[in-house]
Length: 150
Image (tube, rainbow, N blue to C red; front, side, top):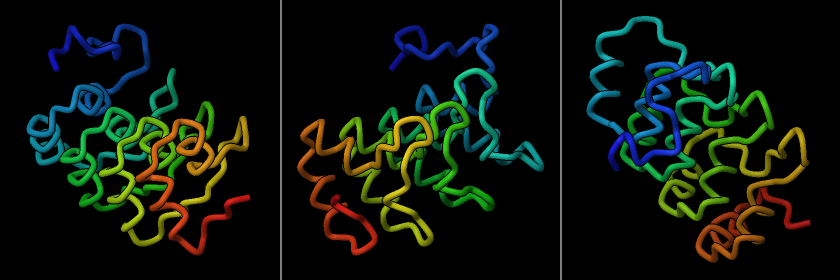
């Protein structure tokens, strides 16, 4: 994907984006790796000021598996960190968009809360995948004992 093709504003023009979130929104794994190596004390769970999204949320929503894996290897990344605007988790965003590979990666992560409801709507990842008809993610979520189908 070319930066100009992205709906995400890579230039950061008053949209509250950070260099890390801009790179994550475009799926630039190599550049993100370089930034992580060069920058010290980076808070990867910090949300953008306008969208409220974290770096992991952008990568999960856009379907960038390699980037999600890279981020989950970093110390201090919490896969349950919800966006500050609507309370969506990376799992919820990946599930909604049918990114089964990312759903699987996140569900395998120790400490993941697969049934975490959004703040604004109360919807869970299962409600998103069921509505969107993403069979693979529905099956993965229903195989978990900590997901309430009701």
